[in-house]
Image (cartoon, rainbow, N blue to C red):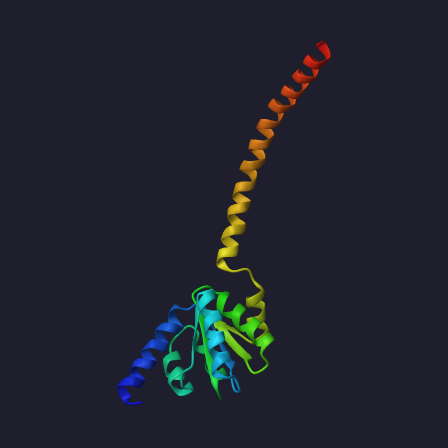
Length: 170
């Protein structure tokens, strides 16, 4: 890899570190190519990405970035998982590490907040952005639904009383 390629990688990593909602660092020693492709596929489905880069270049790219706290985790064979959604990458990595002992989560960062192994697991347990939006929409819609039911209920009660009176009269 020549100097221009290294500078390009550092620039790409810098953009990843700035724009990602969460970055997770893990050791992947012993993963087969098929297992790594499976991890990449799962991450892509969740809206995230997986990147393997030289630790030295990643540390250079981290300089001055909000997630610079992950520099200590960049030793050995590391893989970076990241996503704009603060939960997606952590959730996929946590699930995959449970299924495959060769992937060991070291830690990560969410914005300027450093995450240790337990922190990544806690973030993975949180609802995703889409799930939160769905919960908020359902909470907003519930009172309107209840009001519509309450308004319609007296009319249906009156109608059933009238039909009962009519049946008795007949």
